[in-house]
Length: 139
Image (cartoon, rainbow, N blue to C red; front, side):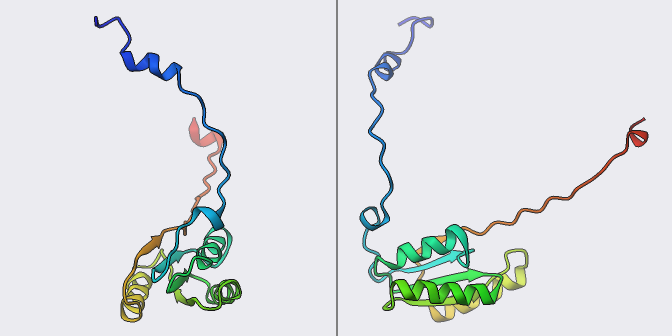
């Protein structure tokens, strides 16, 4: 093979056929979580909350809802419990912009959870600082 010839694997790529689209089905595609302890940041709403609800259906021992807002966090706990009443669902207040809050939440979870098997870092903070520059300042 010279440096101008394509690698033999390149020809094999042409023979690949796209796989049939597969829709994710949480009830069938998530394995048993029996005995597992899960913590999900930002689980008081949106994708985090829905993830907690879906994972609760797979028999984990405990799910921690970690969020800044206590009221919406406790509401999420109740919503998850409606889905799977046998799961121990708990709220821990966590503000990821504060190291003190992170340390306090970690201390609570370490004291109350036997282990941590699944950590889902779902929370995110978007901070955009707007800045207006006039054309006079540019000249």
